Length: 256
Image (tube, rainbow, N blue to C red):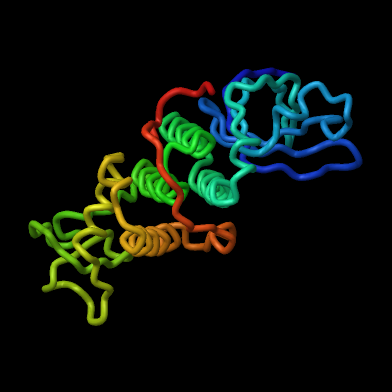
């Protein structure tokens, strides 16, 4: 059977039989990969620790009829243990990988690099976990073709600022086309949303907790509207604010 090699992020795992696991991954060049890791649950497994959720691996598989089979896996980014040690980061990472799983089937190097960047930022504590998550969600949807607008009106193109946000219409809208009772956003919230979309971490890190809370609600509504089915992991999300550090969420690079 033909073999292939790729970089991949482990999204989720399922037990199979007594010693195997099905590993669902997002590959940089192949897109969604579902493969069996044989004997991975045995203590003698050669690569068991490499194929846990949130890990970035150099992967070699051979193709099967329904599931591929992992032949070799070496760690490129060991983010799992650091993420699991912090509950806010762990819950954010679960939303991130579920979103990547739902958004991406075909190969998308942009989505792959953005995913790696988000997990790396969580593992290092570069910013608050909630900010990293919200930035990832906005940018992942933008890559998928659903970029929201936080400046000009999403319907008429009328120049902003506008305070009415309508997820179904694609972002902020002018008062003339805003439906009755639509939520109104604070100026600070609109500024934060734009910063999260563009990666302006100076503005994002300086935002207040109430502003972050309103922005998170807007982003969650926008994501769930476009994904049509709710993200299960959002129900367990810890939105507590943690102290940010200096580095950014950059959708580049794959190594720890």
